[in-house]
Image (cartoon, rainbow over all chains, first blue to last red; front, side, top):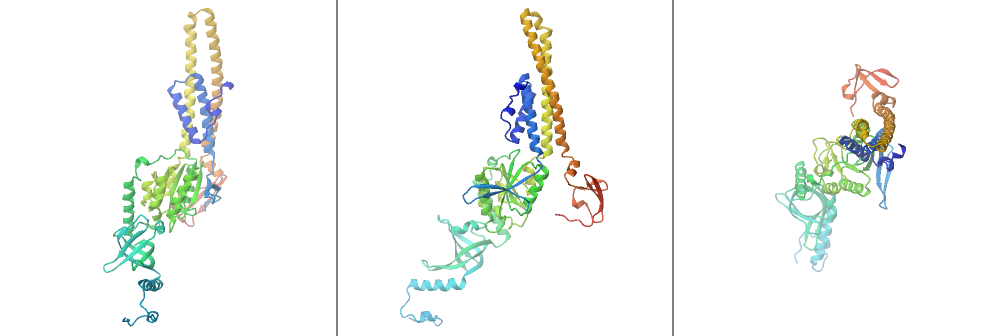
Length: 86
Length: 410
């Protein structure tokens, strides 16, 4: 089976949480329609598992990251970490 | 030439009559130096706005009037545009316009003479922007379902920012909150707020913006009623959630924003979904995918049984061999696939369980938080406690019996 693991998630990987979750929903819908071949179903299943792992990892990040936007005199932007709320 | 008795000495020494220019200059020096900056209350009438962008109008009361001029450069600092009939307090310098031989007030600042005037200014701007289409529902952008970066335009030391931070920490901490700290009231606040919104758009790194501040008087909230802030919100390509004051406060940007939140906390609730809901969604998706895939394998087996049972036996021998081989092959692959799934299922359920259990109260305690119980029930708010109450403070490794000595609300 290993040579068949060329689903979309494995090739490129999801870029954002939103994209991953959207693709996961698409996979659910495709499988629900029941039109996919067995091979395709297998690929979709594996892709779905990869996507759900990706989403769970993102969700698992416990700390809210606080940052601050600054525009420099040259007109470029800098995003600095903000240590405290105050 | 007859000289009035009170003529200043300067004039008395003149040997020739003054020119009009000379006289006007002297009047100018005398008036401007003796009045300086004054505050005067009156009603605006006869507003003229030539293409230069300056404002000219008359300030009057029942028995007198004075010409007023407001230079274009001062317009951005105003709480409202001068309009006929408004009662205002104008602060400015008395000057003389020599060309016309006319004294006037050069307005530095224009304040409403009463709360009613501010309300009037609010209604006027609202009507104007409504007519221009700034509030059109069709122009409103949907909020992204899962923003990774949330921009916030407010004071970095204000209650609004603290509220937003605490809601996000509780509800969906897997985001970046990028602050652009601005003054939210006083002179120049509106300009700073508008600029911050523009800069977020230039930067382009935020998925959604929250613009607002905590509660205050109508004057305190006024920056959010200014035209330039409304226009910056309207022009923003990034969806904007307005979050000004309390539930009952409505400001102009609430009408222009893509979504109006009643408070800054409510804005934070609106821009992210709850992590629990999202976890549940993913969990359901995984289960559904697994069930559907199992069904697909089952129907694959069914197909093979059908082939074995009927079709194949009516074919010539070598075709039959081919079919058998095909079936063997398919069966092997299915077994591998099913095996694969069973492994994955177990691994996945375990990881989901870990995920879900990390949200249980126990694991929160293990992170160093404590829980307060009164009569064996959790106390979620300080307001539920009174001095003298006996409570239990529960930690991950044990608990402490305590008595409430005082209750303070934030």
